[in-house]
Image (cartoon, rainbow, N blue to C red; front, side):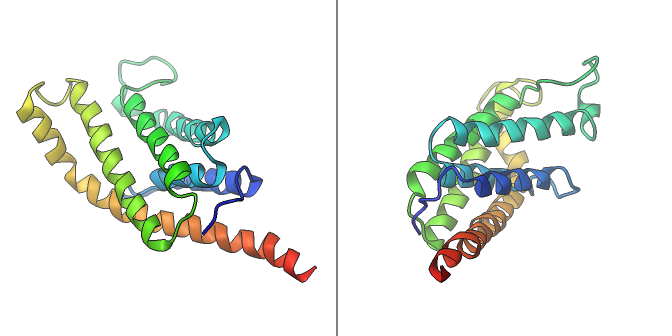
Length: 190
């Protein structure tokens, strides 16, 4: 499918709705965030708007989560938790996924979309867990520590793969349906 609908308000609305998946109770790593990054790159393109929209919405949801349900993880922080050590690797992963969405998914089909979604989950897993290991707080700074970090994260990879496939199908499929009936079908009937 050709993604000529870049920059649309409809795509931004879908992005904001996808972020809400983080703010409702869910299984660990079962959110639309990776799918959101692919979607933003695909429908908004590789430009400031595409990169900033998911990053800003992702950060705002982090801000809410880190100061409410995850506040217990920051006992040494007085006041609002504006920054956490995990953020750089998570946002680097997101930027890579936005780039992949913009470059790889310009023209997509279901198989290409599914493979890209699975790849995005693997990229997120590799980069974010490498960042966890590099923080030096949970695992020893050696090969055994890195292996232990990735091994401990395997259950999260499973839910990430499943959620990314599901949310990617929902985001891309719903967007195409809404866009078709709201714009293309209307133009055909006119």
